[in-house]
Length: 314
Image (cartoon, rainbow, N blue to C red):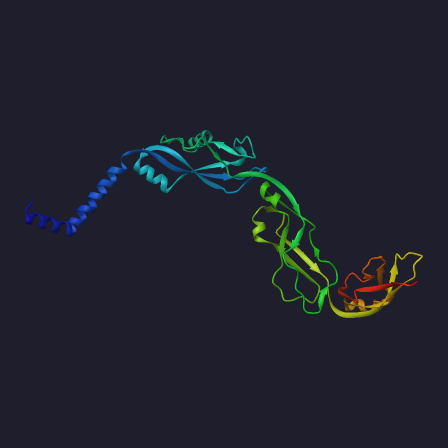
C-alpha cells in the first residue's frame, strides 16, 4: 500500500464517516452474534409462598440455574429479566422437614406449567436444591427489661414492676427459638421518674426479627415514692446458744440505717425490727448480725457493726 493510500485510510477512519462505519460494523457483528443459537445457563427465580404452619422461610426468593438452547437475544433477555416460578410451601414434595430438599424435576414441571409455550429450557443444572426452610415451633417467654427505669434522686419503686403480660409467645424457626432464652423489651427515653407510671415497652428489634411474636409491645407500670433515711439502735438477740454456756456479746446493740418511703414513716416502728446473731462456736469469735422485720420497700440497708464478738463467761 502506497503512502498516499495509508494516509487516505487514516483520514477516513478519523473522520465522521469512518466513525459511523465502525459503529455500523459493530452493530452488524453484534446482531449476527446474537442471532446464533447458544447452549448455556440462565437464572430462574423461585418465589416461595409461606402457607405451611410447620415450616418457616428464611428467605422468600432464590435463583436456580437452568440450561437452555436458544438465540443470543433470548439468553441475554433471560439473564436481564429472569423468569419466575411461584411455589406454595404447602404443596412442595418435602420428605424430611429437618433437611428440606427439592428435586429439580419438580421445578421443571412447575416451569413448564407456567410457561407451556416455551420449548427452550432443557432442564435445571443441579439434580436437587436445598430449600431455605426450617422446622417451626412455638415457644413462650417471660418478658424482661433491657434496662431498669430511671428515677429522680431520692425516689424509688415501692413495689415490684408489673407487666401487662406474664408471658408472650413466638412462632418461628426451631434452631433459632431453641437458642433464644429471653424476650427483652426496651423502655422509651423518659425524664427521670418521680410519680407512679405506666410505660409502653417495645421488643428489641434484633429479637423481634427472629420470629413471629404474639405481641411486640407491653405495658410496664410501677408505684414510686420519695425515700427518706431512717436509723435505729437495736439490741442484738443471740439464738441457738447451748443451755450450759453463759455467753455475752460486745457490743450488745447495733445501729441500722436504711431508706424507706415517706408513706411508711408514720407507721414504721422499731419494735417490729430485730437484730439477730446465730451462735457458732468458731475460732474467730465473731458472729454476723442479720436484720429481720424490715418492710419490703426498704432499701440501702447498712448495719454497724456488721459483726459482734462473743465471750463465754465461766
